[in-house]
Image (cartoon, rainbow, N blue to C red):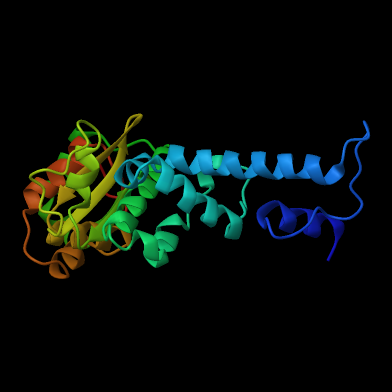
Length: 252
């Protein structure tokens, strides 16, 4: 193992000793200095997770969250210089983390919060104007083959739990009173301007939008989805400015 690899491994595994070859210019004990540095690195990553997953932390409490995050950090070193990228695997980790099993919706809340982060940092793409969209939709002959391009910030999450209601409750008074936690919800996450928004949509609407994202035509997406309110769904996509282009290109 190279010196760099040994140093990196020891940063995240507290059972490993201080790497060989380290020295201190002021004569301080290298092992002691390394221990301080390792603690600072891990603390910074735990803080980054707390910033990225505030509702997860609210649901389990600060002490539990930081203990869980500390275990996660030791087995998941960062692979990107961007702190906003760190913690992509946290939801999957939570789903296998036995002490969190008593909060069965916790992993999906983590997935929702990760998608919100991805939406916030997604590329900027100009939406089509409502007038342009209305003109295209008015051409019945073009609709069968029409493919709708959606903003890269748009994401979907299908959950067996009331993830949208749980997340929304923790934006205000942080109470789950009155929420049917086991009510399956389908979340639509998107960035409208600079604000990331979260909506609960019908199962059919989620299926329809997912098929549009996959490149299916409007007709194909409709045929592959369960019954839903198409007008309401399109109105939501248009009002939130996430329709960015059409395929094939439709003449004005």
